[in-house]
Length: 183
Image 1 (cartoon, rainbow, N blue to C red):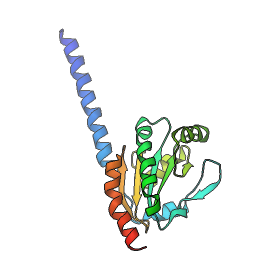
Image 2 (cartoon, helix red, strand yellow; image 1 turned 180 degrees about the vertical axis):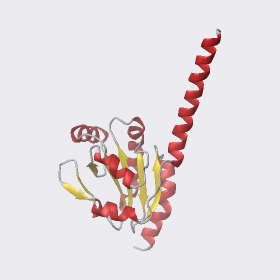
Image 3 (tube, rainbow, N blue to C red; image 1 turned 45 degrees about the vertical axis):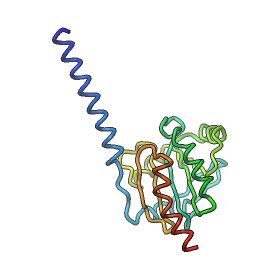
Image 4 (cartoon, one colour; image 1 turned 90 degrees about the vertical axis):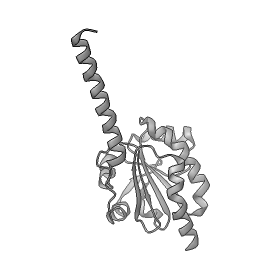
């Protein structure tokens, strides 16, 4: 291999390593969970559902709430949704409510939600959803971004990147048990 080719290869490998490290950094450190502010932000926020009706996020006060920011064009988001559907089915009777906030166009979201059989409310934020997610602790604005709130509206977990059903179940089990115990 000639010297310029070796240098180019080294630069490409270094750039790829930096990019991979940056992604890991985003996944691990890209969120700042707001202290008490999330409850206030969510209670004052209203977004249209798939039928165009304005829904206030405070509607689900008193439930264990999973707020998931996603988009139809986001591959990790698409892989994450089947797990969210399963968890909503499994735990709805125990006081869980998953709410999807789509950072996307309403027509694309409606078609995708129907195709996937999404069984939880979807609100359409358009590109304003990125600002909302930043206000809720997502410094980078990347997707997917998930918040888990206890029934009092306190943020228990802020997660940037795809969350697996196993990770989410581990977070939800104690919250749902507490909600069931307190009636």
